[in-house]
Length: 353
Image (cartoon, rainbow, N blue to C red; front, side, top):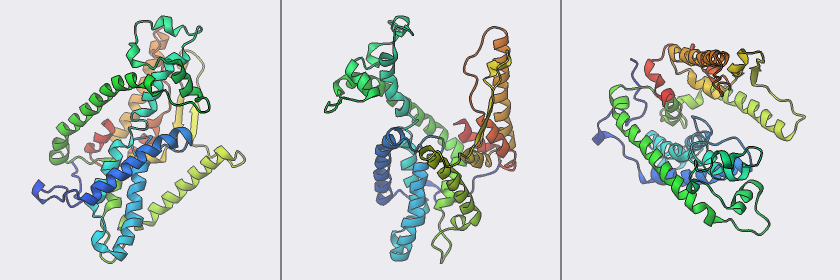
């Protein structure tokens, strides 16, 4: 099995020889993390911008790492070299930001808050929800105040204050569950860390790019070899142009829409039970899939198509599965997974996680 490269000085050394997290790295990580947590809901729900933590590789945390590496560290190396952040400090800052970055976004709050007020607001005589679910949903889990539920979805009247009292009970009850859930995930990480990192030496694809960015530059250089690679910046520019044009199209429809998704709809029974197929060009996923083995990439193709086939068979037998449709994300992974066939089987760890 391929071993993870010792790209940061603290990797592979006994605890007494590892570089400790400095106060500067701790302060920077906590301050920036708090700022991103506060900005994320405004960006996601008010401005409707690109999600800062909407996928398996939070771009907000990575953007901070880039700023610290390409701007802050370059200035410090010019002016006060001794204050420049080391690779271990940069990764520590990135970790402090990336771990909580999903909580205000798709990791919890994007679905946690609306679900507390959705039932009371959307229940109607037509869907008969209140009769169907009577006694099955504990009242402590839902916000039942009419002003609070209507105000959440439609906005409060001018001058009205947020009815916090209606939210306290459900937030406390769900908060206990959320705390236990995160404690469980942290506990599992602690149990598996030593085996995966120190014994198996797994390669974690999602960590490789931040590690490359955080590398120390060679003597006499202000940025490292990875950030001086022209191919890296060509890819960055191309993707920035594509996504900028797609974003501008939302505000100015006269700007052409660059299509990145194609679908195949099937309406004939029993094939319609599959939900059709969709191919989406997802550069971020394609890039990380390069680090996967071809076997893992193939498995994503195979089991997704197997799910579709199961949906067709069960629908034909009179027991439809329901939500077997959706985008064929594994298709993008499989395309790139075949390219990265020289990587070890340990690369699948983060995929499973």
